[in-house]
Length: 266
Ligand SMILES: NC(=O)c1ccc[n+]([C@@H]2O[C@H](COP(=O)([O-])OP(=O)(O)OC[C@H]3O[C@@H](n4cnc5c(N)ncnc54)[C@H](O)[C@@H]3O)[C@@H](O)[C@H]2O)c1
Image (tube, rainbow, N blue to C red; front, side, top):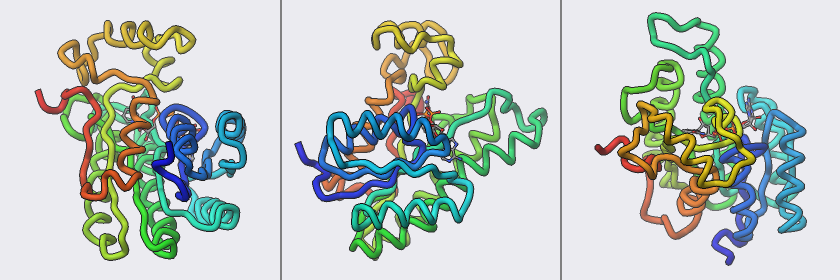
């Protein structure tokens, strides 16, 4: 399979969860991957995973997506190593456990979450798009969430940040089509990355189906029992990202793809 042959993907948050799954999947489809994670050890772990199956396809660069100089340097290193960057997968993000309603939340949660979940993808697009332009075009995959599609999440700061990601993605799509660049976003439901599994009390060493069953039994108010397909594993979301990064989605631009089993539809 070589759906991404000759492509070079800059993947943030590649050290774990969905970002890691994207890195492994993209490399298996022929892409070179730049693994940009603030946690160097996690980045190295993903590097070993990718190199184990697809040697010489990955570079790990410790990167803080909230820091302009750090993102700029990581993109430059990736482009230097692999000749270009033509895919941006802006995956680094996540909510804090003490995120809360707008009237109750501590403003320190605001700073952290807006920096990571909105400023992060903004900076990666700001500094990454010139690389895509130099490459003659490319694709951007941003990460929003089901929380931005329906107002049911108790964490209002994360909800606001992910709503911003949707607006940003549409604005980028409406501006950079001229440069042969598409921008889309994925809105996952509940994905059992290690972080989320731990928060839900799910044993991430258990078999896949067992993990999903345990998570579903919680009858979460975002993705309840009527939405059994709204619970997934990082690999499920990597498939959607692969589609949006590949030429197979050449007619898809400025879209938000819900990957939440219909939770925002019914
Ligand atoms: N897991 C879910 O249920 C879910 C649902 C909807 C949306 N999402 C979104 O999908 C994306 C991935 O989620 P996940 O659960 O796989 O995440 P995760 O917590 O498993 O991984 C996030 C990675 O980002 C890295 N990171 C954190 N801060 C960073 C920074 N400043 N710079 C660079 N890297 C940084 C972490 O080290 C970690 O390796 C996030 O944007 C998240 O908001 C996740």
